[in-house]
Image 1 (cartoon, rainbow, N blue to C red):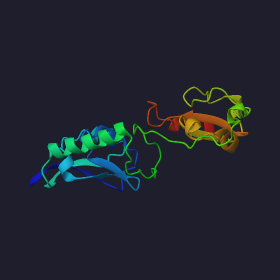
Image 2 (cartoon, rainbow, N blue to C red):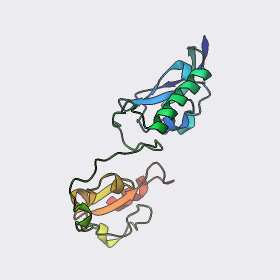
Image 3 (cartoon, helix red, strand yellow):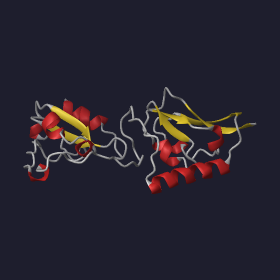
Image 4 (cartoon, one colour):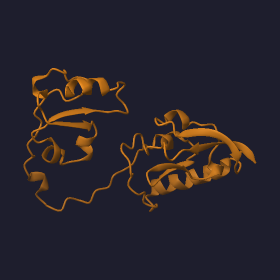
Length: 195
C-alpha cells in the first residue's frame, strides 16, 4: 500500500539518536552510527521524530510500504519492557560511532573495582588552571587566554572520561559548552577568543 512513512538520509544523519527517543513506536534504531527504520510496519508515518533531528536527515515521504501495525508495536514494546524489568539478557548494542548520544537513556555497567584499597587511594589533583570554564561565561579578554593552549570540550566529557584532567587538561585553558543544549552559537565567541 502507498502511504506516508519516515525516510532517513544516511549522508545527513549525524547519529545523535534524538529521533530514536522521540519515536514512541520504536521504529528507529542506530545501525553503524546512523539512524535506520527498523520496520515499515512500526512507523505510523506521523513524524514525531522529525523535529528532533538537528541535521534535517529525516523526512516523511509517500511510498509503497507495509501498513502500520499497532499490535506488532505493542507486542515489541511489551517484550522489550519485560526483558528490561526482569533483567533478561538482551542483544548488546554496539557503541555509537558518533558524538553525543543526546537523550538516549542507557545504563552503563562497569566491572567492580579490582583493587581493594581503591576507595582509600588519594584523589587525583585537579589540572584546572582557569575559572570560569563555561564558554558563555568566559570573558574574551580574560588574561589566561593570551597565548594559551586551549581544550574546548563538551560539558559531559568530564563525567564520561575519568582521566580527562591528566590526559587533556594539563597546562591547558579549559572551555566547556554543550552545542546541543546551550541555546547559543559559540562561533563568534570562539573566534573572538582565538584572535
